[in-house]
Amino acid sequence: MVRQKKITGRLQNTLIWRAIDLWQRLYEPLLLRLVRRRAKTNYEVRLKHDRDDFVSVIVATYNRSRILVERTLPSILSQTHRHFEVVVVGDRCIDDTSTRIKEITDPRVRFFDLKKRGVYPRNVEQRWFVQGSVPRNFGMRVARGDWFVFISDDDVLYQDHLETLLRRAKQLGVEFVSAGYEAIRDGNLVQVMPAKNNRGSDLICGGMQTWLYRSYLKFFLWNRHSWRKPFDRPVDYDLQQRFYRSGVKMGHTEDIVYFNPPVEGTNTIGYMAAVFAEKAEGSEG
Image (cartoon, helix red, strand yellow):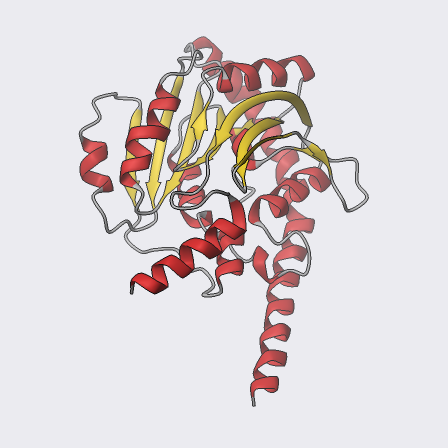
């Protein structure tokens, strides 16, 4: 019975991810050509209204009000590039996130809390691959910028984050640019530079929090089903591959633009930090 359930589960996963993958391969390149034509006209209108380089920083959050308000948002609001908005989207928060954000007087900060939490896998690894996808997709719908930046609710942007990425995107004439960052891994400070993709393509890309890309690419949704795939399972890996194969103009820089501190209560980041947090939550319960 257990073996039969596993086989059924794998078959279901295969059917779902292949159906999504087929749709993406067929339609995303076509949609890209269409939105580029529309964007050319819209961009000219925005220039007339002094909206050039208006950036939307989209932050998905879930019950991290203190860190979000005391660490992450101040790092965004201190950017040297001043023409931006911050779109914070709660994944159905049940803490005091809403109350804390309402106390922020900066009009550039907007907060939305989903009425229903996104549906993610129960398995901690699979959930880590795709968590935050639902609020990010919502954030793209309500964002007003010409460019998008995505960060987590515990990250720290260096002051020239937006300025550096915008400058590089213009230098290269690209729609998407990524960069390097610093992080604490296993108690050690490391620098992580954009790296070449390991699937045989020419794609060189940095971490999600170093991305800046044109907002007309918002039809490339964050795929909450990417965990079902046998490859590129993290949602950002999935998205960058879809950008690349659809023909998005992509570039990178080795400038360091943000700091990824260790997850609270751990000395590391990423999946291992998620596992540690899961065990700690279980022991408290």
